[in-house]
Amino acid sequence: MSTAAAPMPASSPAVRSDPAAQAYLLMRIVFCLAPIVFGLDKFAGVLTDDWTRYLAPEFNDIIPGSAATAMHLVGVVEIVAGLVVLLTPRWGSLLVAGWLAGIILNLLLVGGYGDIAMRDFGLLAGALALNRLATAAHAR
Image (cartoon, rainbow, N blue to C red):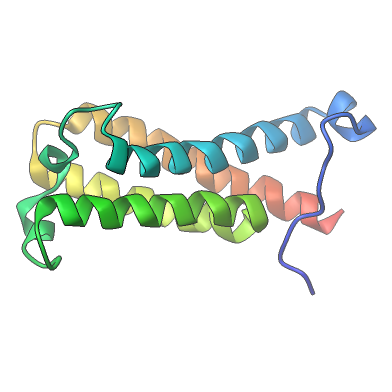
């Protein structure tokens, strides 16, 4: 049994007429592109000037190397997560949800970023919703 959801072209009748298919396509695109963009920015530094300020000392202490190296590792994981969503959204969505849970914990440990942690909780819920939509799309 394949774990990848069947491709759903944007011009297919299901996408044009089914709100669930539209939501699935939209969320699959977002949860593919957003982690890749955030991951690439760990190297480019366009969205923020210092990603290391978001890294909790508790995590920095167990990750080998500097905080900058840790954030590059984070970037690689985010890029991979986005690609997994592209290829197998049922599993990729769970990977993204787990990753977001880790980010939320990290932000709460850093302190002062409760607003971002709350936003990421909403994204976590969206990733879990994508998992359910992907499961339904795969069953069709």
